[in-house]
Image 1 (cartoon, rainbow, N blue to C red):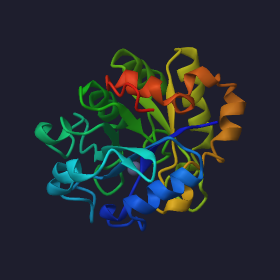
Image 2: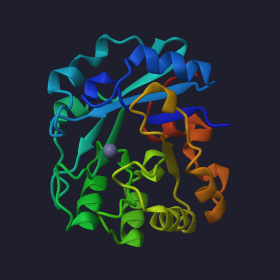
Image 3: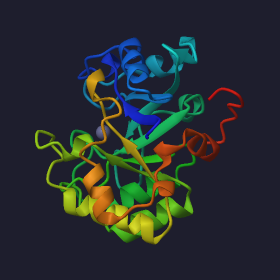
Amino acid sequence: MYKFDVHIHSVASGHAYSTITENARYASKKGLKFIAITDHAPNMPGGACELHFLNLHVLPKYIEGIRVLKGVELNIMDGNGTIDLPERILKKMDVVIASLHKVCIPPGESTQALIHAAENPYVQILGHPGDPRYPIDIKKVVTAAKETNTLIEINNSSLDPDNSRQGGEKVIVEIIKECKRQNHSIILGSDAHYHTYIGDFSRITPLLKEADMPDELIINTDPQKFLNMINKNLCGEN
Ligand SMILES: [Zn+2]
């Protein structure tokens, strides 16, 4: 049973359609314990502005009985791993994902872009690698992720035939297998842009089976593992 969904967007993303409260309410109904709201950073057209992230501290820790982690999905802008929020904001985030998005970076230096993003001490998760538009050297990216203690996200929406990243199944299985080979954990994300997608990892499940991925390398089964990784002391909170 998965207790945690790390990649959820709210209306602040501009192209997502549920509020944070609706997201939390649905997560609670679904039996999750933790969610991370990771709206798009400013360089995504319609993405949330800096003030949105700075002001997240006004949200309660628990909404509808769910521990709501405050985060962001950054855009990686170039092969140097440049991202689109300053350190003073990243410092305040519980969860930081960095991803390649078509509107922000042309295909080309994807491997270097992900490796450099992983080297950024604020980046905890590389979002949805395995996008066929961004071919990568899987071994190099997973090695860099392991060395920097950065998780690799396996993203349910990427496997939706309507998604712009569709067609990456084989590569995603290879990424999962390489993580297994290197004994490096993955984290599952729904990438929900509407609340009914929260905690839906159904498209990922067959790929996990194909790669024979052990549960202990899937962070979502135990949120405390994630919190340990990001050095959050939430004693008694979960
Ligand atoms: Zn994304």
